[in-house]
Length: 467
Image 1: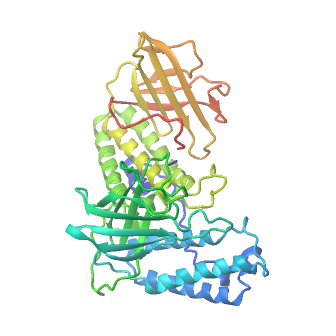
Image 2: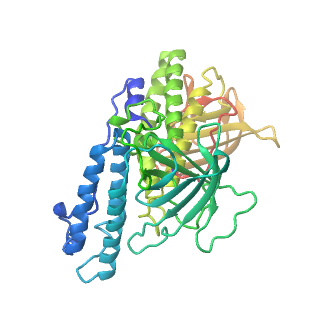
Image 3: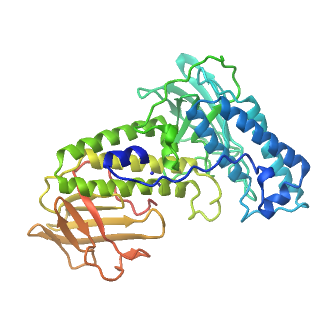
């Protein structure tokens, strides 16, 4: 699983970090510009080409009227919608494929109807909302609460794992400004929810968009399918005054008008992630003021690498390559969950930095590795366990674990374990490796720089988590 504010963190760190270019909005196929042979053949259908052109026109009209945040999120949503129609490398469409042509026509008609009704100013959460994957109905409930119903309807080529996944919830305002309640799975054939239902639905306005988050255990699936409940929704079913003002959006530490990377777009879309981003930027500035120049330089380098990896990690979670059956499905919930974990762990590292640590015992963390060296409760020995990963290749990782002792401030073991060496306040692992260690898979070295973190920080080592 897996990703932050490139512009702001690069500025704070005094670094020049490359920013990925923004992808152009994909209004369906955009048949007038389609050159790929497979989709060009689909555009030969006159009705499909006509609807596609109407979608393109409607998108441009809504974008022209929308505020910058709504426009940015709608462009992303339109890109995702275009991807659900089919990948030119995997979808075989020809003029005789009536079933596939019908699927494309139906998807474009549904999208066009939503765009034609789309309102770019929202007065409240109540109303009908939509995005590329799902529809949401929000009604005023008793005691200031809300009743919510969400239905996923997108159908991918040769896959119907998502269509029909639905949820309802009675939500109340919480102390954080969200409306929160237990999510009830209403998908056909779903089992009744347990008494300790672990799934929560959370929603609030973010400017003129509705932000919905289905919180869940990463090991569980809400619908038994790839859920797409989490996301930004756009108002289509309520009249709004022309002069209605957007609800105050929770702004991150950077200017969303310049956001281009996928993780930055997600932070702008989500009030919770935006708040974490602000805390990280504040903590980062504070740490740099209180550490020596050597540690500050090491931390800047690690921060730069962490920022760069966030976009890759988020994108990898959206279309997970390890999910061979539904890799084409946009797993928005998993991607948001991983990004939130990454932000939370970074904040924990920055606010719990233990720069005065003398020995090697304790928790160590960096942008691509974790290590814990802790006393073994059953013996006088210590147990060391760690993991290094590469966000660009989910198959590249190192897992290491061993028992040993602390001798003259160093961890000593006879088991297979990477070398450990102090470098100022930091710890370098795998520094003297000449060949790929046996505890690494595909990765050529376990070398990484780690920073000392105080006990109790919310950072955990998990072999199951794909970063």
